Image 1 (tube, rainbow, N blue to C red):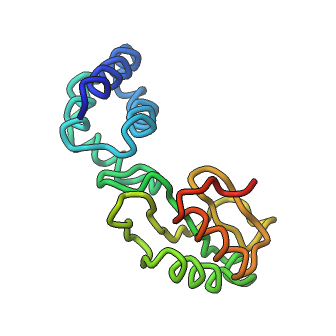
Image 2: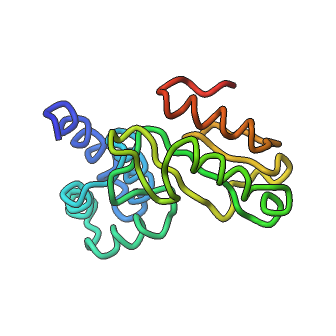
Length: 161
């Protein structure tokens, strides 16, 4: 970590320390929002400062699919494959994203820009089929639209709103 990242993590830990175990999840979210993932040494710091055993820190960090204990891309493309999206064409969206990004689900591009994921539910069934780029939802997509979106993400462009 850089000195500025160390300082930011220290500030986050100070902010959540009074909450102890109750602050574990929001603390992990704050740290990840700043670092992009949860490195092992930072997880150990979180546990120590909050008074939570490291096993419990990892229990929380690995339970939630949007917390990462391994490095991920700066942009995460999440394709929903829940029943509503599956019935409305999410396999075609996934294939379009795989092709455009050159990645299989769970892979990150060598430059660290993009990670492709499949999620069991993104919570936007009314917009099926859908995908997310980081926290931005794109719904009622067809394969061509998903491919254009994935190509823009891969090129480092801001996804269209």
